[in-house]
Length: 351
Image (tube, rainbow, N blue to C red; front, side, top):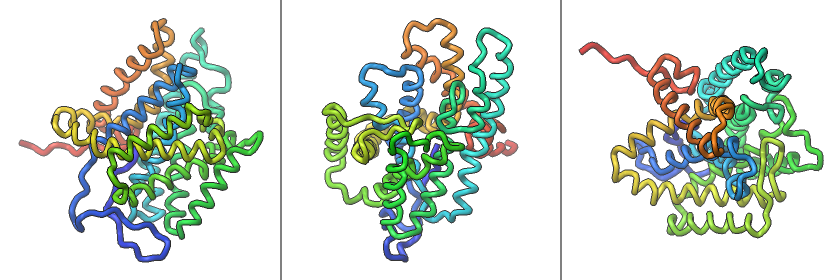
């Protein structure tokens, strides 16, 4: 769901972040381990919707949504202008958002005369966005917030570093005020600065990652410390309803866990995956289906819920078994720009 990183330009202004180290002119290789982490983040979203209040839920909630935002910032192209960012986000997020809004609304209207009808006002809630979204529009709040958070991040990274920090802290503070209404704003716009905080963390982490000593050990330690703090009582999060846990501590723990996971997956996991060309191909295909899975899985969960599945984990497997192959197929068709946000595949030439 995030664009591949572009090669960055030089650091010409005081306060800008240094670019990641790479050979000038050389293509940046994909990290298959991080791609797998992106896939697992999508699986965690499906799991959270299929199995709310599961045992140990707090250990997933603390990172599953922050990871999406952090990775989006991690992959933010350094050389892109604000106008370029707007065009890219419209193509990869805005167009699929509107397409799925129409398609899912047609389903809602089609089943409205039946006993399986969705709740009244669900379409209006989807049009408003934010915390007003419900089945089958469960993930719409996240996509709209991600769209505007990416634009806000594009603005703040062009400024001295402390400006981004102030915006992030102000956003987290506003979201955690008593009776905060940030989650109920149109398209969830009130959550944008708070969620941008995770994107900003990802953006800086990628530029400082090469300074981390012993990344495998450091990554594992970061994940254990973060989850251990949750076990000791740090509150978990439910960002859709402006729930960011213990003020500043829970977001910091989420960043710690996510950065630790990136360190592990970009090193140990990536090295292991590259031993199997089949695994590399599979991960490369599935990571491109993320947008479709995020939009479609609530409808699939709703459909399989009427089949009397024996356990929520079975519903998760069924949802992924439907969405993944469908996404792979869509990415090979003319519909990919509308349903997954990816460019239409090039036509093969004769012969």
